[in-house]
Length: 243
Image (cartoon, rainbow, N blue to C red; front, side):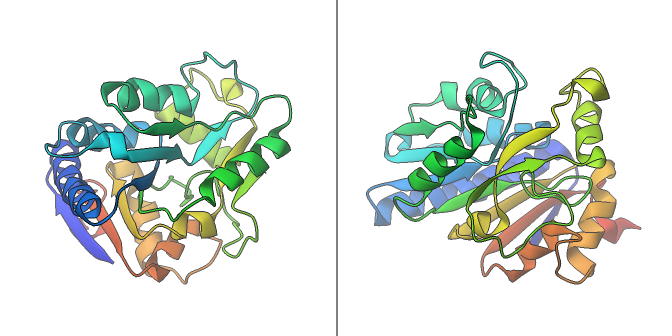
């Protein structure tokens, strides 16, 4: 795993965006279209803000997916990840397509429909973070690192739901939905190149576990160590090297 440590979250975002931008430009020189998967979380804001300003990217040849979505929130809720991504990133660009997860009245059918979209062509880039409990997307521990599905309905654990309040996405713990749709670990790892941005002191223990613990569903983020091209971006607060 290629690890970059920046001084601040802003510098982390700028460094990651520069590398992602270069990868996108190179990919578009080699292929007609690219497909990427985006994480939706405040921890990704600095990177997404910098990425949308990266020059020389023909976004009209890029299709974007996202990796998880709450079940049970109104379609216009600002806490829905698709809406957050539109506000932070998508609506600032002219993408070829933005494929949203829409749980609707039948989340299981929504999973199958989204899985079919993902399977239409390879995924070129995955831009992700990790949770305070070591989750990837909404794959909370103990996660199935070998899931045969690419998209699933899951129940969020307490630590994951607490993080949503810590991130100021919800006012109270009781406001956080219990269930969500998520891409599975194998689906995330199908990306040709992974870029993982993890700022903040509250993520330091999860980063330490990701880098040092045995690869297992007890810390889902450890699965990133099995990928042949994963870049990890930390700041001084999240990097365990500083202790």
